[in-house]
Amino acid sequence: MREMALIVQKYGGTSVATPEKVIEAARQIRAAREDGNQVVVVVSAMGGATDELLRLASAVTARPDARELDALLCTGEAASAGLVSLALNHQGVVSRSFSGPEAGIRTDHRHGRATIVEVDPRRLREELARGTVPVVAGFQGESIATGARTTLGRGGSDTTGVALAAALGADHCEIVTDVAGVYTADPRTVVGVRRHTSLLYEEMAELAVSGAKVLASDSVDYARTHGVDLKVRSNSSAVGPRTWVGDGRRAAGAAAGESWTPVGLGRPIAGVAGRSGLVRCVLRRITTDHVLRLLGELAERETEVELRRYGNLGTEDAGDIALTLPEDSVEEIRELLADTDRGIRLDEAHWTSNLARLSVVGLGIGRRPYAPLRLLEALRSAGAARTDLHVTSNRLSVLTGRGDLAAATQIVHDTFLSELVTPLVQQAGPDRAGTAWPLAAGRGQHHVALPALAAAE
Image (tube, rainbow, N blue to C red):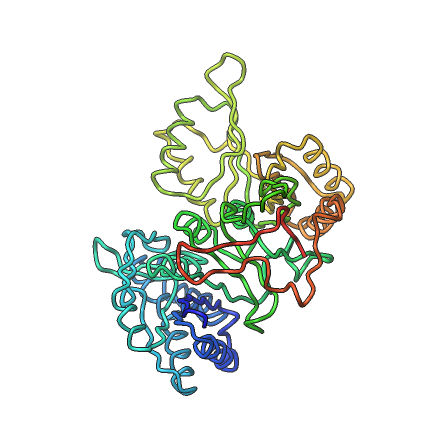
């Protein structure tokens, strides 16, 4: 008889966007319970609810107080938790809803982008022992310093789910969304994508940072740090296709007399992802002291900005620095540069807006000599703008025009996917739908049968 497992299921906004979808989510939760599992549920706000709350806040004030804005935004997830709990109780499953603080989630003091610093799962354990299904409002916690409600930023419900899974020692965390796993590109906009049966944490983290919307980057980092296995599946079916994200060290070793292939060797690309709404700022002939002061203040303010290029001009103590930042950070940077105490005049800053970043992710792709060439050739054939090529071990990224992103993503995806050698790609049949990551019952005793070469379906 199979031992009872503990599963954390996180339902995104599209999965609870309507009463009908709430009822379906409750049905899937009930089915997991009837299959002999303990289940803890984490929910996002109903689709569009957070944007509507932000719109209401902006209608009241142009500069909302950060503490009160967090208090407002927390109500979106709270409503979803209450609705799912009501639906479960109606279906005969005893359930209680919890806010983030009630579930034991403690954060630092930063409003709007708080970090989880502590999780006390005792209350949830007590409810599980009583046979209750706890439904936790994601995206939120309580400041350990002030006791105020805080929010974790966009995608914070993913992080809530992973944090609870780690604190509870859950067998895995399911991320339930509107796609059936992680694909080589967004299946809603790119033709010919393949679904991965499994990905390493490193691959998923690079995809998330690059703009893939399936998982929030913070949640992947948290999962990797705490060893939480992730299962990404569609909200339409609990038993259909999915993608497992985990640690390749759990791959099974070779049996006696068999050869063994290291996980990662020859892996195909993990995917192509893009992020739009970016602005490029180039500061010319800026002294080293000014650069260090600028970067220090950006770090202190925790402003989201990416240093794309920096270099001195010969032996002079002056150089150029190129920064890429989201559109909503531009005013903050302009104000910083306009401060005359820093001696950086705005007429030395050159701005380019309406940009997007396109990235190709794959283990070791930056060490393949042909890879940057393929990327630039593909962009040129699409007539797409291209600048600031950046190469790391596992990612190639380049800035292009926002209007070029869709066509560029398609042709870059086609270019790199066509280079896959046939044996690296396994088409999954019904008899293999669940064989990529068979999980043993006990936490810390997972035996994961990963293929020697990762499969993208």
